[in-house]
Image 1 (cartoon, helix red, strand yellow):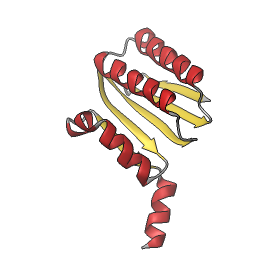
Image 2 (image 1 turned 90 degrees about the vertical axis):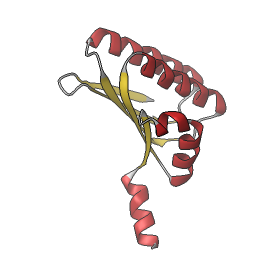
Image 3 (image 1 turned 180 degrees about the vertical axis):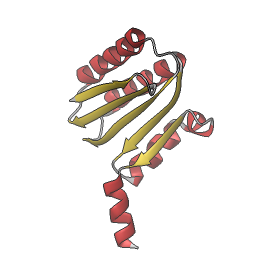
Image 4 (image 1 turned 45 degrees about the horizontal axis):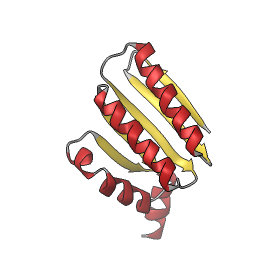
Length: 122
């Protein structure tokens, strides 16, 4: 399941992914995101993807998400910020997309609920 929101004046797109995201759902998500970008005519923009409430993706779903992010960067995205559920996901995706992270095009952030657990454990 997913939800897309456009904040045209702020040049911001928010995408929320939750529950079990299938291969077909991720493909449709990519198509709808691309269409939203084209129809909105907002030019350069940023995307915030919240996948902290989604179940871990299988390899094929993850590959499609990578393709979607690459396409967005080619279409003029200035930055993709992805909210993940835990440190392991943050480390995995940062390593997977390291060049874009180093260039400041992407970042992987922990869900604030995960941060509370880290602080309480200290």
